Length: 274
Image (cartoon, rainbow, N blue to C red; front, side):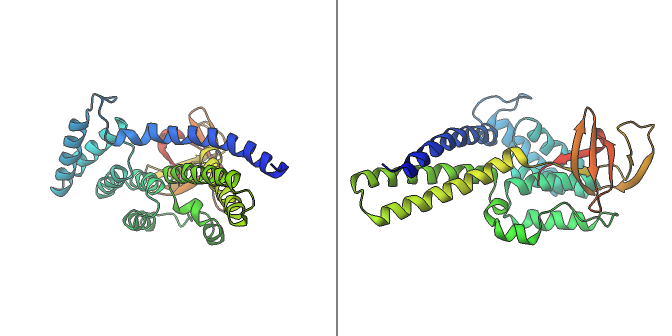
């Protein structure tokens, strides 16, 4: 076996172990969508379904406070599902809680990145903000060049990575049986490239993504230092999304697109990933 293949196998082995761990982490989160055991807060599978249906009924009846309370209870009990976050965002938006609604839509979009309803409602919430500040989104060039990174959820990337990994090992086994088949060699090489690409995207999501700070109150002072007595640098309003640069105890350092930075209390923002 050539040196190239030996090195590839070593890299693949490391990625396989790491990716399996990431997929397991995703499963810990997503398996709670329909659990068969009691969750924190005492919610069973049947009880969670009941809470969800009652929250939906409350929403249809115009009782948005009760609906939001039900959806929030599900989230707090571990039902970290994009549909629940989407419904929660709708209820919060109807209540006039623009900041929290936008944060819920962002969480829903991270889990359901191709859902047009989620995107439409997030766009509507953004258009309702008072500040003319562009949300911290990737450029169109990056979105186009790395389309898979922005159009697949963490779970989908993990499933894709493990699937391609299985195909690669299968093709590698065929290469041992028919070592001189060029088609097998090239297919194995392309699968390895795809495997590394998916692994890189998943690792970026896992370790390099920074949360977005969504402003909750109608108006919020942004300070020069992480303390209330410091000078106010500028003001922002409900629903505005700011890039997070640093976190220190109960404070978050945020930045504007023009480079201005300041500190806000973590209690006045919702942190969400894009």
